[in-house]
Image: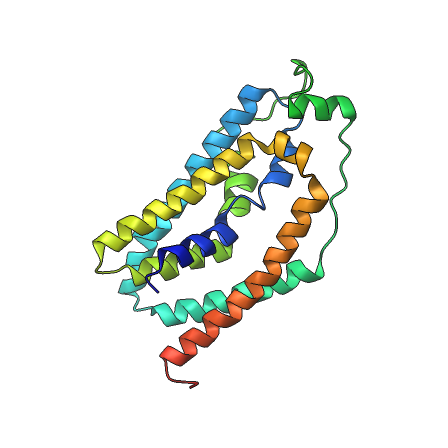
Length: 223
């Protein structure tokens, strides 16, 4: 379980930037660059604080409650499997009403319209706390993934520091993805991003089953 590469993969899939680009772009395509940067920065900071709270505080609480890592693995596997099946079965391309002029503004081809409506950038308001930080970045299965690896790091301070570093790397990737949402959408587009997300959902289903099997083997329930 003390595999940083595996931890990065799981965090990237459950907490990473692939799922944030389309909704963030649709939310901010008509906003000034300053607003986009503020939303991206504040949402990343809030999401990072929540992730660290889960990794440090909730993991310690989990230990006091004597919730084993295998229990977390099974619960997380079930939750991830249900989420993955739902995502695989509910694949629908997003429809946008973005005009060419608005799209040019969002992707840097045109000048931002100062009269466009501004989103609030309050730390604990919409859309910073919700829906960007929660549940788009910090997903329920992401919380379970953090708890799983944090539990494996108990008693090993060096590994815990490395694990937190991996978590911070994923959060930094989220920030970059939000800041570059316009250019990414220009070159990639919603259909391809959604297709990638759908394929990742299929991968998540396999990871979910593997997590459950691994926990059952450690508990000697199955050979």
